[in-house]
Image (tube, rainbow, N blue to C red; front, side, top):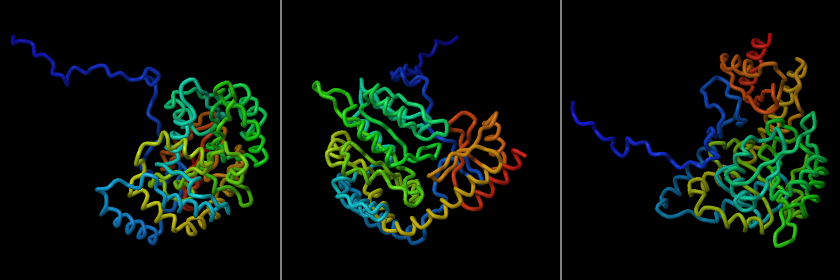
Length: 383
């Protein structure tokens, strides 16, 4: 027998020093499957128009000639374009200094928590809300606690106010409209929360700080006409931050551009923790070009809202519970075995999402053809 061969360095499989709290954590992500009707991640079903594609192509081509240089670190042109869009959509005028942007609203949240959360601090949320919130908080080495919602999944304001008093969180994460329930709180309820949050943060040098209230309006443009955005409260409440995205209503999920409107002091704090040059020159150019087509993008929303309400009524007529949605999806159920319904729909080429309260499923509003495919498959599955 020959001498035993010693393993090489690469064959020894050294023990990697993974953080202990991550040992049982699975990577986050909804299923990515190529099916006829992909209705599980709340995408806008309409692709960019040929005119928008042409403008984006032209803008990116022009920027490409200077890719040997770092991009504008403070992306002032993009922030100005976002301010113009916010004025067009909400009627509210904010200076560039109150606008921030990042690679999706995910990075906006990470930056906010990087500034205001951290070891020994608590972040407050509600049950049955965006499933990424605990992930953000874990990455900030903070504790995430939630308060219950009402039985109809609307916000339980009393429970939330008590949570502010009990936990003294540095940050409150409040999705409005909420994902996955689609429910939205009223402006008067937000005012109650903001007033309470003035002095419910952690003590700093013996004095109570505020709780930073982050209102996540990822689906804000899908709210019914006449329902105000939390943006209207920013002037009076400097501890409020309103997060938005171009992914959903604007139909640019592949661009990865989220943005924030907040007091100048809060933007300054975020800049303390942001990575330098975090938005590429290509992203900035594409986003500015896309924002030039805001009118056509916003015109799509009325149709999507109408089909959302029609689908919700159809499911209710079949005896299912459907919360009043102000987003581009509906939650429906309950089912004795929701996974079986999910699997049966998938077998028929329709992908929905298993998320939220036990027994419930969530379906995004797709094209008219995709909505019809869901209805047909659902009737076959449920009889």
